[in-house]
Image (tube, rainbow, N blue to C red):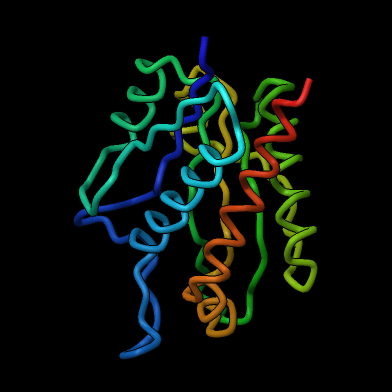
Length: 186
């Protein structure tokens, strides 16, 4: 029987998430999340056999947090990976982090550690914000190991440019995919 990975492109529709920059430097988080999620699905399908990959949204539409968790639960997902970009009022803050629910399973903690390790190895020049325990709804209400990746900060002009580069978006997807693959090597 095939295993199922559910990828959750954060935000969407009227919920842009973080939106930063001006004119040519402007980016909305929901668009970035969707691009990285599509690339991640492609990478996973390319490298993992006997796996299915589904997204909680495939276009710029609003999907509630309740619907996101319910989709993953109803589909019988083996793991859930939510893709985001971070933001903060202080524009110099940067870094990559992976979040798990505070009372998560050992498997979720293992998944988050492997993804974070893979991201840090791929991007050693970026700040490693580590694995964080966070009470995000989609981490709390999903029944399978679940993580939320904060790929970098849109509020920081330097890391916003990094996030907007197609090559970096692909490399983010590849790094996350590698972390997921490591989790399924028993």
